[in-house]
Picture 1 (tube, rainbow, N blue to C red):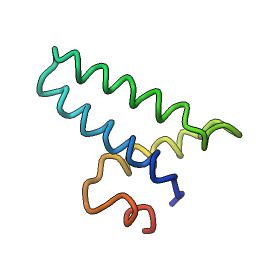
Picture 2 (tube, helix red, strand yellow; picture 1 turned 45 degrees about the horizontal axis):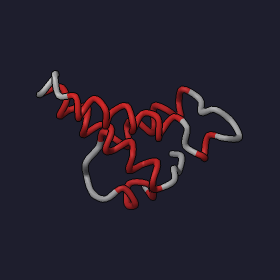
Picture 3 (tube, rainbow, N blue to C red; picture 1 turned 60 degrees about the vertical axis):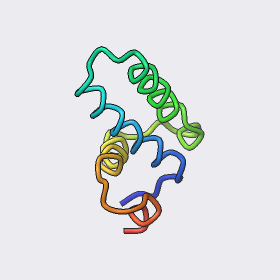
Length: 78
């Protein structure tokens, strides 16, 4: 498993939570704006500057964001 910077992992975790909230309240402009901000934050994160992530890296990051079993720091070490 790859290791991701804490801020990137937290942004992805927040993205997943925001997406779930938006699914329950589809017309909420505030949630759509936040989702857009988080998408930009994860896609243009400095750790991707040298090389764009592979599909597998995106998959791992998304999976990390979806799980809610403990703090991000602990999940990064598994």
